[in-house]
Image 1: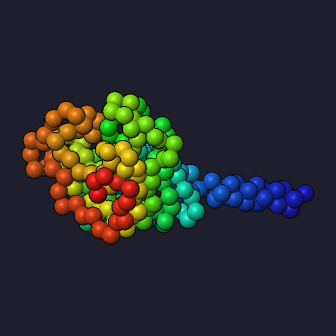
Image 2: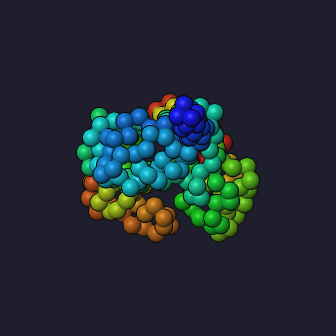
Image 3: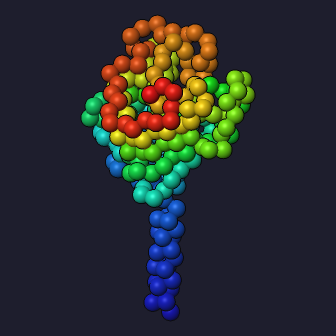
Length: 229
C-alpha cells in the first residue's frame, strides 16, 4: 500500500513538471539577479516575462530572458513595453532578450488612429539588449488612413520615461524587422526625445542630458518593407 502511494505521488509530481515544461515558452537565466523579488525561471509567454520584469527595481548581475525555440508570439496591443528602471544596471548588470529566431507578430488590430504602436518599446530602461528576433507587421492590419490607421509604426522604439529619464546604453542587434511600407509612418528603429511615449504629436522635449536617449547601439539588423530604416 505504501509503495503504491509513493508511486502515485511520484506520478503526480512528474505530471506537474511535464505540464509546466509544456506550458513554458520563456526561460530565464539568473532570475534572482533582479529584485526586490526574483523573476520566475520560466514563463508561459514573453508578455508575462516582460510584465514581471517591469515590476522589478534593482539588478545585481546579468539576466537573460530567452524565447524557447519554435515559439512564435503575438505582441500585446501597442507592443511589448519594457519599462523596468533597475537600480544598479550597467554593462555587466544588464537584461538580454534573446529571440532564438522566433517570429514576433504585431497585435491586430492596433488601436484606431494610434501613432505609437511597436513590436518592442524600451521606455526609459537602460542596459537592455534585444537580439535574434524576427519582427513583423500583422497582415490583418491594413488601414492606413490618417486618424483611423490600425498599423504598426515602429519595429523597435526608444522613448523616455520622463523628461529626465531617457533610454540609454541599450543594444538592438541581429534582428529581422519587416512592417508594411504602404503605411508611410513605418520605422524599423525609432528613437525620439521630443515627445512622450504616448502623445507623439505633442512636443515635450527633455530638460536634461539624463532625459536623452544616449549611448544606444544598433548592429546587424535586417530591415525591409519599411519607409524609414
